[in-house]
Image 1 (spheres, one colour):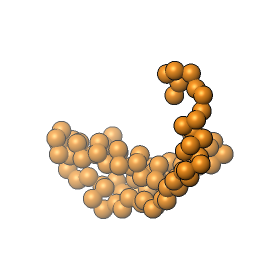
Image 2 (image 1 turned 90 degrees about the vertical axis):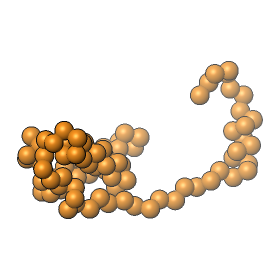
Image 3 (image 1 turned 30 degrees about the vertical axis):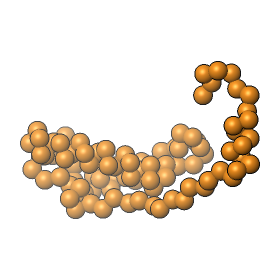
Amino acid sequence: MFADIDSAYLKRFETYLSKLPNERIPEQRLSVNAIHAEMKTFRAILNRARNIDRLIQVNPFESYKLKLEKTSKDKLSREELKAILELDLPEGNR
């Protein structure tokens, strides 16, 4: 029930998410950023419950801090990009 959702509930939910396996790397757990994405969706649902549907009076995310880690993205080298472009793949292949 929406009434049961408070800051302690959010913390338990975050802990639950942190124990789930990563889909791409099953031997690892969800990353901080994957958990952040799930929590953002949950926050949006609670915002709607409060602002549009008036199902709750206070959104517990107002006193809850979402965690996010900065990531770095590696670029392909010219040689790697060239190798990809030179691949002989069937038409329409992803």
